[in-house]
Image 1 (cartoon, rainbow, N blue to C red):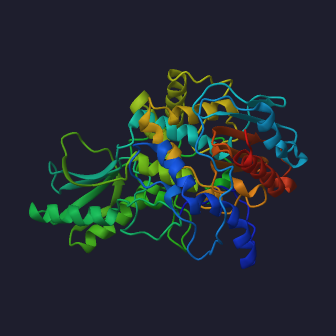
Image 2: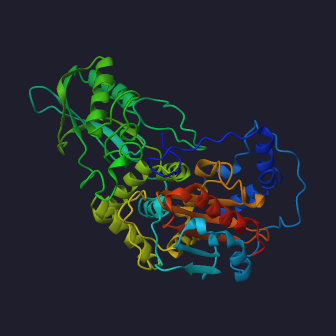
Image 3: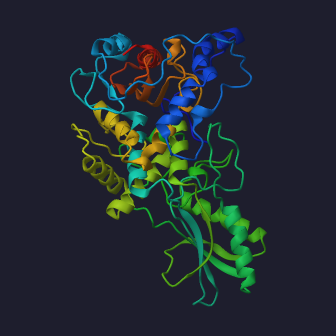
Length: 487
C-alpha cells in the first residue's frame, strides 16, 4: 500500500478529534460540495478527459453530517482564466509564507492557470529548492506526454521449446502495479484501478500449456527492460524499504514483502517465485529454481496480463504519492524517448519534454521521478508552467494530471490537511504535497472567491526539524488563502 506523502522514516502523529470539531472543520468545504459548484468547475476544466472518475465528484464522507450552509455571494461562476490577477491580493493571501516556522528559504510562484506571467513570484536566496514529492507532477506530465494516457504495460510468459525441457520465461514489462493475486487489499485511495496479477497470469499460462501438451517446464524470469541502479545513489538508506524498494520492471506489490517477512532484496526473483508457486497449483511442474535470463526473440508468447492505463496509474500515484509507481513511469518515459530505462534516461526524457514545450528550467535539475532525492532542485515557476501545460487545450492527453490532484480536506494526501487556515480553502484547492526532513511544499490549482483559476507552487527547504508540523500548517494556510481570496 502506498503511503501518503510524509516525512520518510518519521512516525505519523495520531490525532483524536471530537465529532463536533470534525463537523466544524468540514462545514466550510461543504459549501462547495453541497452546491455542486466545485464539481461543475472541475467538470468544465477537465472537458473530455474521460475516465478514470474525477475525485472532485466524490461527495464528503457519508458518516459526516455536514450541516446545511448558505451559499455566499463570493461563490461566483468561474471568471476569465486569462484575466489579470491582483498581485496585492495574492500577496496578502500568501501572508502565512512569512511564518518563521518555514525557515530561511521560502520560494513561491502564483499565476493564472490559463494565462501567462505571475501575480506572485518570490525567492529568498536561491531561486530553486528541493521539491520533494512535487517532483511527481513533472514525472507524471512527461509520462503522459511521451506514452499517452491510454498506454498499458504487459507482463507476459513466453515458451522456448528448443531444449530438452521446455523453458518458460516470465517477462517483466514494467507494470508498476502488478500484484501477487487478484483483488489485493484496499489501499484507501479514492481511485484504485483494477490491477493485473501473477496468479491470473499463471492460470492463463497453465491453461495454454496444458492445451499444447506441456506439463513440465523450467522457469526463467526476464527483468532486463530497465537498466542502471535499482536504487538511486542519492537516496538515504533509511528510505528502503519503508518508502521505496529496488525498482524493477518485474515485481509484485511494488517489491514489498508479505507481512511478517523481511525486505525483498530481489523483487524480480520474488515475483518469479510467486508465479512458480501459482503455476504449480495449476498443475504445471516447475523443475529447479527460477533463474534470471533474457527471453529469446524466437520464443512464443503463451499468456499475458495488462496493467491499468498510464492515466489511471497517474491518477493513483499523484493522489497517494506513490514513490514506486513514479520511478517506474520515469523509466518508461526514458525508454520511449531515449531508449534508456534508467534514472539517467528518464531524467533526460523529462528535460526534453519540458524544453520542447517552451518551459524554462530556471536552473532546475531532477535525478529521480519520486522526489526522494535531496539532490533534486526545482524552480516553483516550472511547476506552475507544467500545470498550465496540462490545462492547455493543445494537450488533452495531459488532463489526467489535473484530475489526479488531491482535494483539500477530502482525498489522498490532503485528506487531513488545510484544517487550520481559511475554511474556504477546503474543496477549493487541489494540490500535490511534498515532504522530506526539512522540506515542505505544495503545488496545484485553486479557484478563488471570484472564480479565478490559479496555479501555484509553494516551497520551503530550510525548515528546522522541530518545526516540521508547524511549517506544514503555515504552507497549508497559504494555499487555503488562495482559495479564500478575491484575487
